[in-house]
Amino acid sequence: MSSASPSSSSPSSPPLHLAVALDGAGWHPAAWREPVARPRDLFSAAYWADLVTEAERGLLDFVTIEDGLGPQSSRLLDPDDRTDQVRGRLDAVLIAARVAPLTRHVGVVPTAVTTHTEPFHLSKAIATLDYVSTGRAGVRVQITARPNEAAHFGRRDVPRLPDGGYGTAEAQELVRPLFEETADYVEVVRRLWDSWEDDAEIRDVATGRFIDRDKLHYIDFEGQHFSVKGPSITPRPPQGQPLVTALGHASVPYRLIARATDVGFVTPHDAGQARAIVDEIRAEQTAAGRADETLHVFGDLVVFLDEEPDAAAARRARLEELAGEAYESDALVFTGTPAQLADLLVEFRAAGLTGFRLRPAVTGHDLPAITRGLVPELQRRGLFRDAYEADTLRGLLGLPRPANRYAATPAA
Image (cartoon, rainbow, N blue to C red; front, side, top):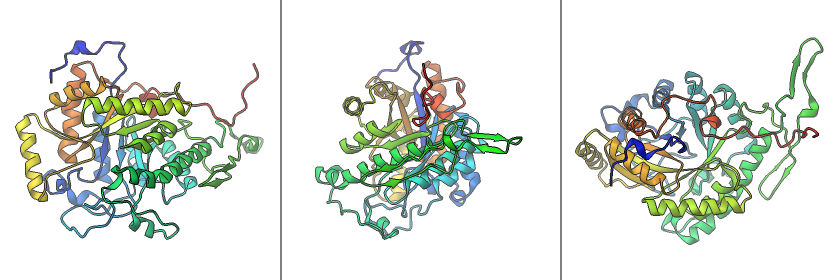
């Protein structure tokens, strides 16, 4: 793989976007046992504030925060009895609300599981986060097909997936209704964000008018999965529409990405696969009538980063020995130097990806390696920003602030 030079990026090239996915001590299951890991701090606000502040130090576009409706498990669909891996989480939306006021530029995107939760609740939570962050909020929507998580709620059953997990054709058909439900879920959330016009609040003390009731709208959503009248209880968010993101590994979730999101995360393992995934999503985007809208497609990679490639490989081997098994992931696992990772990102970008979401194998080690090693390398090549150029997350990603769908269009 050849190194890219600064001339490989012309001034007219679109910027390369970078995000990090934060998950406890890191994406490797033995990450918490590393000296730098701070396992006693995982459930503290200070720990998460430090991570997000470090991401902002590196001028990253945004962070995502993992979440779920059940304890982490080494099994795809069922709980396990392991005691040698991190179990338990803080609520991602509440983490985001706590750390957002401590930063000024980086976007904050918590994960929300849509399968057993209500869109009304999520809409006001993310709208509130957008206010707390002054326009830097987003959400990563996620389904769950785990029977034990359905049992926490007792309101519905989910079909048991076949052996082989999500990757089989049979499994994709079984989860299709969950993804279709999530598309409706996002539509409800977006309509609720628009249910207040931007100038609905008058706040005129002299006349005693706080709100213009004519500028609050019933959304009257009636679909197969939801019946929601609205309006929201929270005024329209500062961004109008906070960022909606989703992760996809196959055609069914790619359709959700194309139909409902602003950013899709995908997991190609080589440039050819990246190109095929991007082409499929772009075709679905056109079919959904969104061809003229900006839809980012980010590649996900797990990263073990060190200044010397042998050091990165040795660290990965040590963690695998602690875990008692080789580390595998849905995403490509990269082990090497910041310069080598920059080469790979350039190669994947040429296949049509517009950005990358990096998953630090050991958060305490690999997040600073991204912000203090990879970012300067990309800057030297003219591939990444030298300063934040916008105050909102949509602005960082080149996304316009959308017009309110319910506001009357001024007469020509």
